[in-house]
Length: 145
Image 1 (cartoon, one colour):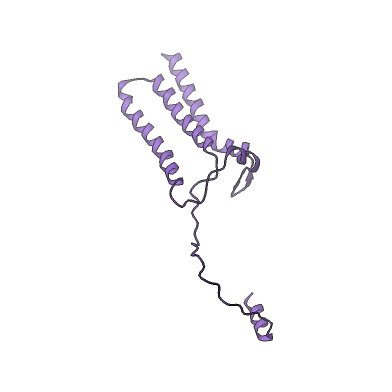
Image 2: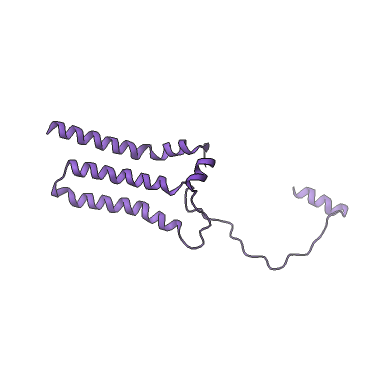
């Protein structure tokens, strides 16, 4: 590319322009603090994790489990709450998609574009399986007891 510019300058065909007035400072690194997924997917994930704890906690309800369950609930709230606060920081240009935008556009990943259904399946497969596993364990414990 630079050899083309040098050729233009050598032939006298280069156009020299004045430097623009004071331009605003632009940071080269722009932070994207969310994954572009709608908030409803995160809420469904949190609901599945907390639902698993409710199922297992009620199936194996003993006073000994109160403190570990409370700690796990606090960790789940922290794992999703801190990033939620992080996305709402000052000067954060990125916003999550709405459900309508997500439905029409999908989301781009490293392996290509995913539709809303495909992305939802990828995000929710583990939490839903965890709830199913909790239900299975609770049913087995009820049958055995």
